[in-house]
Length: 248
Image 1 (cartoon, rainbow, N blue to C red):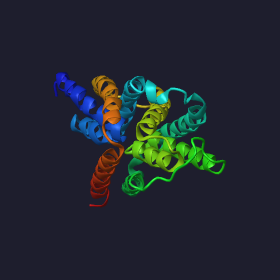
Image 2 (image 1 turned 45 degrees about the vertical axis):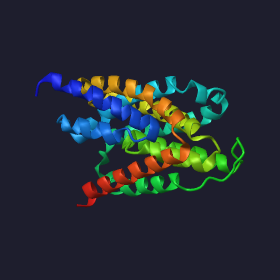
Image 3 (image 1 turned 90 degrees about the horizontal axis):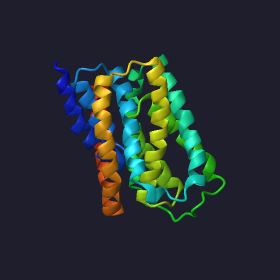
């Protein structure tokens, strides 16, 4: 295969970056694209996570309005997600994620269902009992994101919809920041101990950066309910596809 073929990962990364920033489903596009280039599953997973860091950079740089004044709330969530990302990245180096394939479809379907649930009016600051749930959930999603990654954005979106009263654009911006940090720390583990296919990760990262910048612009302009329906429908589609691959 000519090395120039990997340039096709740039437009794939743009589409994945937009999908990830808006719906938290970047890997729905980017992971199959890497497999189509002939990368083994674990190498594709590792390279995808490294490239995803640039999608997070693009999304966060375009979400400064939504993230303004949220530093105090984001620090403990970031610490929880980063811790999980480190654990998940180390787990992937110790044990391939093949066994996870039987559980993932149910996780994705459950999170997609949760996105559609009606929201209760909540105070801007979570109640005392909510904080441990929010932080524990963020840690576990960080572990999952660093280890396997598929639809971790939908899981985090569902958690924050349930535990906060933030708007969908605010939650999207927070989710992109948190997952970007988790992917970054997992990527450090992968760069040191893993086998990153840089010839594929680099063009994909360029596309992610562009698509990540475009995603928040779209989120601000689309009404919340249609966006939730689109995210849930895409998540259900991914769950069905993953279930077919796992149980056929």
